[in-house]
Image (tube, each protein chain N blue to C red):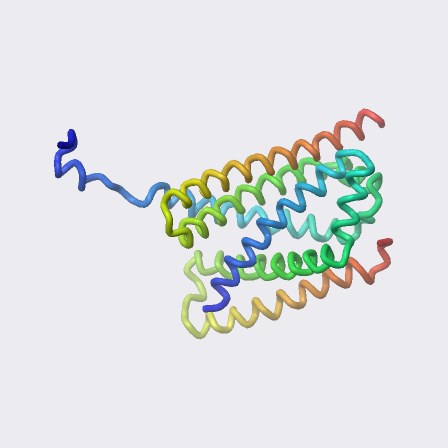
Length: 130
Length: 111
């Protein structure tokens, strides 16, 4: 015996969650990543990456901290949306899928905050040292 | 088409690359030993192989992503156009990847 009427069970199931918002966010982040990733790639190839001091100097200089925080944040956003779709399509078991989707969100949020914190820490310590 | 599954596959490869990017930034913010470890891992033979894979995945995902955005505007959806743009995407990805390899290793930056 259920509290729900047979009609209530079939009506208003709606669309598959937040389809349009997800689709749109994937495109917005994609457009933002075109200049951000190209900027990053062109900068990094000219960076003496084995030299930690030089790397910190570059991270802290000018608008680089802002662009780097935007970069890691937007990559994490775009990546979380993309991995979500792949998990939804290829993980058949519902319990495994739900767990994987939760882990996907948590890992991407943690990575975005950790990487942003690293950038800001370098920017502020370099600033403090003059 | 093969370009569709390759877009997903390269996307997953790049998602793993995000972990490396985050690790590199955190290592740069940390002490010398930690950064030396990151440089040693990334600079090893296996690390360079991974970097090459990420570079190819990035160039392909970028070019094919632009192709998808063009489709989203309702353009280039005819079969013949889609086949042609697939060839263009692969060609431009290869050229872009080679350009980055040249800039990174042969343009006078100390490694």
